[in-house]
Length: 133
Figure (cartoon, rainbow, N blue to C red):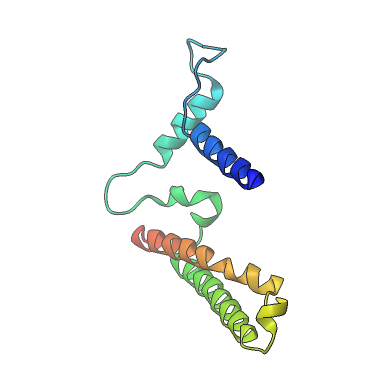
């Protein structure tokens, strides 16, 4: 019980420390640093007004890809995700698979991560279509 209490207390302290501000900074500069100016430039580059952002928010690679290609990539990622999840579900139905853990396959776990990639490329395709690409 003492170990569990220690773990819970450590988690609470870590969560509280994550949301606090530093008490004192050791260095103060009158002029903004290079990192701060880069962050400000990046914020200006990703700001937009209107319904959809410009293509440059997609980065150097996807901003040059046409909408149709991004849509096809999204469908491929979605197909991999659905196949992985359904195959993992089929393995779960085998007798004794839940007890031994044989239904967990690394390729199916990696394939299930394609769902967020499918969503992201789908949004990128929408942005490119709105921008006429």
